[in-house]
Length: 308
Ligand SMILES: [Zn+2]
Image (tube, rainbow, N blue to C red; front, side, top):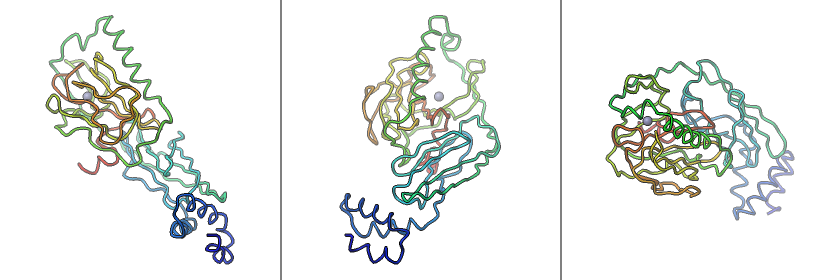
């Protein structure tokens, strides 16, 4: 193997370190010369930031650093907040639904295996996003104006859901994008100002998909089941799946839950069934997505947004 790279490194001394590293990794993975040739080309490129789509308020995109030599260390910040990369050099970056219009800096530092540093930057221009007003009438009165007991219970349940939004690390499983959990009519859009039985409530932080009771619901990406809550006051039977690095998905009002807390749910796992448990006027899935606390429109996730 060393015989193969020595003629090259004599005429190009600089890539020697990279060549040795890549050759070693090629040796370990059982691959040889072709991998080396590919990576040495990449080492000569200037890395660049590539986004899977337009980043706007209430959306998420996959960020990929094109041309970063294998083994590079990547560090990123969006609007001053650090975000992690997966082991393939991909990151899911997001802006909350209430992000103010303006220019937001995206910065990535690439440190190559031979110690070279590339500082990459992009400006994300955030426009004002208009959200609908949705009126929902006919909810049972006790589900809108809570008595003391129900309020205490609902608070506790909401806190257990919120705790999952603070999870960090875990196995990063968002890099291949996402898929729909169920097909059906969109009966409630993301971000809308909700007026329930005539009373203004907090904005709708997910999307509602109406489908017949019992329709199977799949996980939108591989992940760890971190919450399988029974019969919550608002959200009924509720699941939260952690896709790693602070990316999670919430599924509520389920008729049945088919997973348990702690389970690993591979891609396409059937996790539950459509229902109308909790505060609901008909069978539907309320589906929410958080990316390190940011409320993201599930229909704008990579892998999903382009099919609509
Ligand atoms: Zn909803």
